[in-house]
Every structure is written in structure tokens, then in C-alpha cells.
Amino acid sequence: MKNVSSLENIHKLGLFGNNDNKDELINIREIKDVLIYQIVKYKKSSISIDKIKIDNLNLPKTLFVSSNHYTRILWMGPDNWLVVSSNKEIEKSILENLSHDDFALTDLSHSRTILELEGSLVDEVLKKGCPLNLDGLDEGKCSNSAFHAITITIDFISSNPRKIRIFALRSFGESLYHSITDACLEFGYKAE
Amino acid sequence: MLYIKCPYCGLRAQKEFSYGGDATVKRPNINEEVSNEDWDNFVYMRKSPRGKHIELWQHIAGCRQWIKVQRDTATHEIFQTAKVTEEIR
Image (tube, rainbow over all chains, first blue to last red; front, side, top):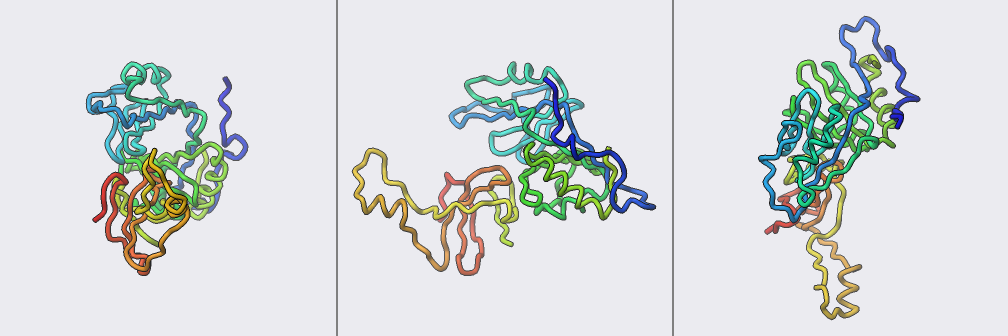
């Protein structure tokens, strides 16, 4: 099946905004070709999640991310996680480690738009539309929030250089892209 | 803007929440004979108190959990929040 990007018509590569004589720009790229799975533990289940490993990663605690080179597992809510992976065998790994009686697994691979922002001014961009207090949200954390009323998930990948991924429902992708790039114009950005 | 402490995620802006009504309303017991008046009260009739009030809110742009919030309807001061399964005293 062909993977059609939700930003195919609007994500044009190049330099935009106030980029003249700037040492540092914000880099924006779209993350495609990743597998996304939602894992939900049933309320009636009494299983402990401490010993569960997916792609050698634990299911993370509140507002944390477990990650390795291929896979990131984000905490989305109580007993609710999002697995984002470029490992094509991730579904097999999940099914091997989670029991059908305790967990529900949903493939969301084609239902999200993912933007990756990198640069020291990324926090300033977020502050323009997101009510989240960014203090303490460093590398290895994640949070759900809203950006100009669009519900988003932010994965704080790295603190130095600041790098984040923003997830939104695919149908909100173009709208989110316009909101984010509009917020970036003041600082100048490079679409990669 | 109000700041509401989600029992799961911590202090968040009101923008992330959605109001869900009076948290003190009790549904009549299942399989119990209910008068029209009691059912009417459960479905439609709500108090509009001035002062402390226990409300339901959903952290709709966060962890998506329903929570209880004790708020002063006149000053908007928030005294306490709790998981929906917990009691606010």
C-alpha cells in the first residue's frame, strides 16, 4: 500500500520567514514511514506492567518516554501508551509480549501527522500556541496538550539541541502545519 | 485563565479541559422503581450554587481522564481536585 503523506501538498522544502543573517534557524521535517500502535491496558486487568518489554523497552511511567534507536514508547494517559517505531517487526514484538486478555492493541500508523522541530527557539514557537508549562519537560518526557486548539502530543526527543516531535490527528495535519510554520516565521525556518 | 491540577498530569491550563457538569448528581439505581419526578431531577434539574461546588471536568487535550474539581463559582478559586473514583470532602 502506498503511504501518502498528509502534508504532501503543503510541505515545501526551503528557507522561509525571517531567515536573513540568522545563525540559527528552526528546522522542520515531516516524519513518515513509522509504525504507530496504541496500547491500552484493560481496566479489569491486574497484570503488572513492570516486567513487560517491547523492543527491549519498558512501558513508561507518567509523562515519560522509553526509547531506543528505532522505537519510542510514549505515555498517553493512565494505562495508555503510544508506540512509534521504524522497526518493521514491532507488531510482532508487541504481540509476543502482551496478552490479548490484558491489553488492546490498535494500529494508528496512518492516522497521525508527525512534525519534527529542531533548534534552540523551538520552545518559543510552542509558547505561541500551547498552554503547556515547558519547565521540566526535557529529554525523555512527553505530554499531550493543544496548539491553537488542535489536540497534540509532544515528544521531547532531545534537550541539546532542542528537538521535539508533534503528533496530531492526520485530518488536522495541514492546519497544524500552517499554525506551526506561521509561528516560526518570526524566527526563520528551514523545511527539510 | 484557570489552572487545574490534573491528578494524573499535574497543573495544566483550563484550555486543555472540558467542563462536564455537576459531580454530585447521582443516577438512580439500576432496576429500581424511579418516579417521574426523580428521573426528571436526575436528567434536567441542576442547582446553580454560589460558592463551593464539585464539578466534573475532562482533561480532553491531555490524558483524557475525567476528574472531580472543587471550585468556587463566584471567585473561580480551585480548592481540590481528585480522580473520579475518589471523594472530595
